[in-house]
Each structure stands twice: as C-alpha cells, then as structure tokens.
Length: 354
Image (tube, rainbow, N blue to C red):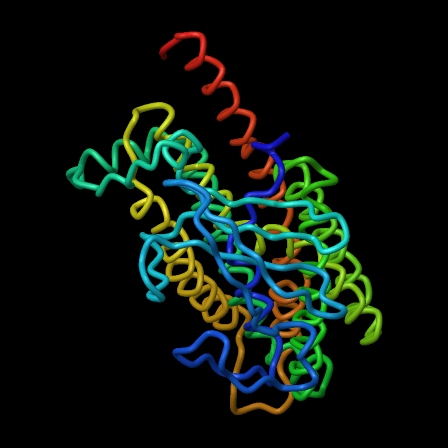
C-alpha cells in the first residue's frame, strides 16, 4: 500500500499554480512575500522550524493555516535552486487525517542509508538501450505525444468556432471550461489516488471518462448545442486531469523499473520523455491541423467555407480528439508499472534475478 499510495509529484501543484491567476511572485525569503487576500488560505507560506533528530532525520514543526486542506512539502538536496536532478521527494499532508502521500525518486534504502544519488555517467547508446527495453517508458512517451497532439488540435479550435459555430470568441469560453475542469480534477487527485490504490486504474478510468466527454461533444456539435458541448468538454478535461497530475510520478516509477532491472539510474534521461512529448506532440498536432485544413479545401479569404471544409472541421474538432482519447485509454492498459515494480522487488528480496 505504501508503494502504491501516491507518489504525487510537484507537477500536480505546479499545474494548479499555472491555472490559478492573480498569484503573488516569490522572493528570496520564502516567508516574506505579499499575499493576495483572495488566495490567502490556498497558497499561503508556512512559518515552521526544524530540529535534527539524528544524523539522517529531521523534525519539522509548522504553523496551522485556517481553512487549509493540504500542506505540500518538497525536498531537494540543493539550496533553493530547485533543480530537477536534485529532487528527492514531495509530501502532501491532508489536514484532517494527517495522511501522507510521498513522492520518492530515490528508493527507500538509499534514503535510509543516507547515500547520495549517483551521477549519470552512461553512454548515449547504453542509455538508449535501457530506455528501449523499458516498455513502460515507450508507453508513457507515446501517450504524452498523443496528449500534446490532442492539446494542439483543441487549441486550433478557432476554425471550428469561427466557421461552424459562427462565434470566434467561443474559443475563450471553451478554454475556460477546460481550465476550470482541470482545477477541479486536480483538487481531488490525492483522494482519488488513495481510493484507487495507485495510478493504473485511475488513469485508465479517467481516459474512459475523457472519451465519453468527447462523445458528448460530438453529439452536441452536430446539434449545434453550445452549452452541451461545453459540458462534454469539461467532462473530458476532468477525465484527463489524473494523467496530467501524476505524469511525473509515473516517470519516477518508470525510472525505478529500469533501476530494479539493471541497477542503473538514468533519471534525467527518463524525464526527457516529457519534454520530447511536448515538442513532438505540439508540432505533430499543429501539422495535422494544417494538413486536414488543406485537404478539406480551407480558404482563409472566404467568410463561408465549402461543405467539404465544414465536414473536415467536424472531423478535426469533434471526432479526432475522441479517437485520440480512445487510443490513450488502450495504451494505458499496458501501463501497470507499479505492479511490475512490486514483482521485481519481491524477486530481488528472495534472490531471483532476471
């Protein structure tokens, strides 16, 4: 249960921070910044002190904030630089239950023994071989490319809003519905991970909901029912929230899988899949939009597009996102990396090697 229950990474918090506007910027002193009163109970800095328990342990005491629901602590081995390669763990503590969800990129035995993370000194070819032999890395990479392709296509929805719905300004309304739904989904993520006892079933179920949401958008789109389209869009975004919130935690599990197999850590190389997915997916999605518009006969000089172009816009904005969500859901059935890691740990404990 300890291994399965949340390795929630800082990504969940960062996505929330990116979506909520009006936040105060950080200064050098973590407890000396101006706080917007409207967000005072949400993102207020804590006053806390620390005392060493022994050589490898420390006790933190922090002040309680009224109406706070969770306290999130990130631990790094550097000093206020927050470099990804120096990341150790994130603890999210629920106020009412004091339940702790931990994210660890280092295994417990290394943390317990006080060992430092070994610097990556493997050749490019050796690293690529380890990546290719980790099927979970491949699945995460393909899913992230599809996800970024999906986002690029949705962001080009201005064509659908302009030439099908007749109101270009609706793009902002749909974007707002997506952002609001993501905030709601991410807020419940810690509770959902605990309920599902890990990420595997949660992510798969989430993308089934996402596909269903886009199905509603298809029906509403052909009906011309904008409110129903907005509802389907929001449902789809809520379904995708778990993956967006726990992606980095899954990459950490994926990196742990390579370590358990080969005894070598390539954490930095493994995390490259997120940046690669962003670049490849965004480029691919934008290119697909251009290809489909050209194939459908889009003419930017016309105020009213041809029927073949309208049909292509329906396919591009209504059908293609749902198809992508279905493909992602199918891929997620192969992403039970947590169970695979548990099996490898058991084999390691009883002395069975691959």
